[in-house]
Image (cartoon, rainbow, N blue to C red; front, side, top):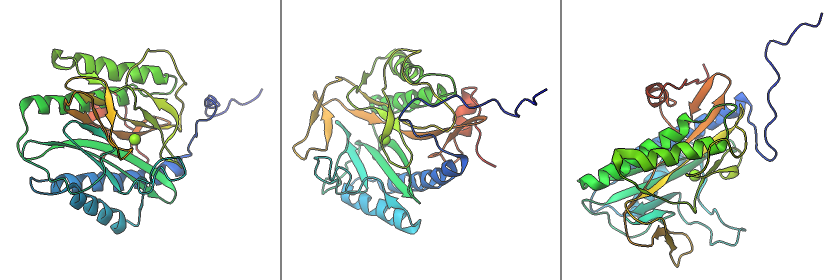
Length: 290
Ligand code: MG
């Protein structure tokens, strides 16, 4: 009689999707912690009167102090885009994503989306937060919380055997139902696979149908990143070929984490606690490496 293996064979990953070993995910965790530290430092420095270029310098210091490289700096070179000049994307109010750091001075009541990426030993981490500058309006705070909740709804839907469409549908349902208010969902930009490159297959749209799309298996890592608005879902691109804003000037928020699918649960690599608290609140098992 043949002895049955201790573990059943792994389901095959959909073609083109990079599956990471536990060792590789452990390196991605180091990148994720650099990202988390950078987001925290930039959020702490984001006050009225501070320019977005000054925050970029804070991000550079965090990368340097951890011996990490930037995922963003010079991104786009060789892809027909002007090489991205910063280490962070800083998008204010109606700006959705890809705001280039510059002389813009933050003002009391602004909201600021901070999107930051780091490379450690060739492996990437990517995350974003929207923070308030000084005192923001209740409407802006609700938008930020709805975006954060939509991201966690998406993360909590990640599990082996599920499909990417299940994650997308969970994000959409959360965004549509939060506080009984409907937010605009930015559909032209999506989450993504992440690993030895920042952007990998599969795309993870922030809207869609359950039971569709690539199947999720152990060893995948995904960046889940809803962008919601108080108004339109239409976007306009700036002349710098990077910055994306809402077409109607309505304010936008962005929240992102990198999550890895582990043998016995999820590991949110860009959260200091690995996602333990937020996942527990949603009845999902968090499984950091020992
Ligand atoms: Mg991303």
